[in-house]
Length: 260
Image (tube, rainbow, N blue to C red):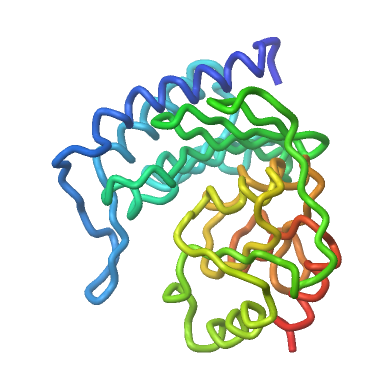
């Protein structure tokens, strides 16, 4: 890493991406479908504008770093330091005018997540962490993030973006975990993981994630004392089937059901 003030750099990255994205929120924006027939994977000009401004700033400041982004793909992805970007995680919420989307800014070193930030510019909230600690900054003030203890699934609140995103095999396994939990909520995308780190949610279970959906969130969750892995207990940074928990007892119980 260079002598650049890292915290100031990331704050500026978040600020500029937010300024690029917000003019498209709650407006009559055009929406394209990136998926094939029968599926809906939306992308907006807000997605493209947010990622473009982040890429420009990263390449200007850290020309030897790699970048992996949802909208513009990979550049120098074999570098020691690689930024993983999702300008609008939760585009379906974005186009519906619901502010449970966020900009994900992650940094991986030698393939392992070392820093992550979730920035919600409309609400003015930032969640960030480096695996050793995690912080919140927003209308509720500034504070450290910490997961809450939970003795088991029967006391847990579980979240997922939507049960419809699971295939026939994974849906049955998710349903079995959800049936053991005290209550559930759907539809928060990256916010679900941040609420877990903040101690409001106990478990997040998803499938079909890409690296840009999860890399930035790993250091936040781990920095707040939580755990996030694949369903088989492996590293979460490559995406796929993901389970995050604030309490290791809940994580272990969820894995047992997901792998039964």
